[in-house]
Length: 105
Image (tube, helix red, strand yellow):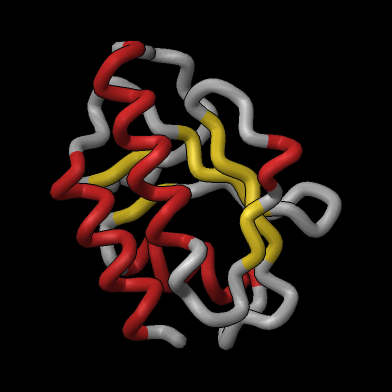
């Protein structure tokens, strides 16, 4: 397994209050990133789904870019990506993620 500082893969360890705040935060921040489309109809608990068809990186390069920078995320599924916010993900982690995504815009 690849060791990452931030693991946004499908792990179901929840801390409901913190997770809800973090999900709201990352969703709001994703709306600000050019080329990212948040799939609101698919928001589900601790999962934030998005499409990146118009983003600067394709999904394969995006996953590699994040992994190279210590962020783990699963590959796309039917053209959709998903961040899973578990109890180990902090707001500071999300700030790092958002900054990485902005740098790749």
